[in-house]
Length: 259
Figure 1 (cartoon, rainbow, N blue to C red):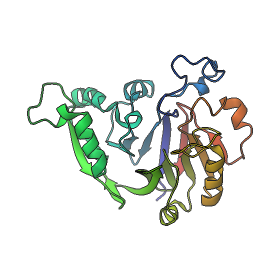
Figure 2 (tube, one colour):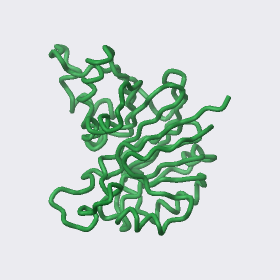
Figure 3 (cartoon, rainbow, N blue to C red):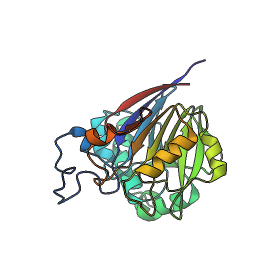
């Protein structure tokens, strides 16, 4: 039976977002809405379920802009603030939906959440705090309400990070390198989303050239670039230079994938 996935780019910017505070560069001053980038996150809708990958500091704004009324789970790639800082705002869903929110993260990320949001995990629950159910994941496949998810181990310089494959779609952010054995999990993709921070080399992120080489190596039918900084360039100018099978993601973009 054919299934489909709808992916919404909730944010496509790097840790500072675009525009960057106090910056007067042409990208930060651009009037093109595609050059306005919240911190990176996607919403994945499939089989009647809604998953959010990463809840960064713009989570509240992203949920409002996308008019997200319900979520089945938040899945974390790693613990950096631009990917987890908005977790407190699940309180709104607790209140409206009268339910706890399921959160999926590996052990190291869970420990970071417990430090950053100690009040959520405290023995004494202050009234109105976020209510979540923590679920432990690792590099093995797991399911959320019948939807199969394949974690993909990647490296963010020396920090292990998880990407995720659902059907023939994969989302990979904060990647610098991917072990050869993990690349096998990324064969036969219809769509891949991958980070491409800027044109210059970076210690912990793929730059544009490296991302294009990886895309060519893995061979997805279509790829989208995300986690972009203001040093990447103007959306309209840079996308015109890319191969036909590579596009630049932008906030609010939706794509449909069958599998």
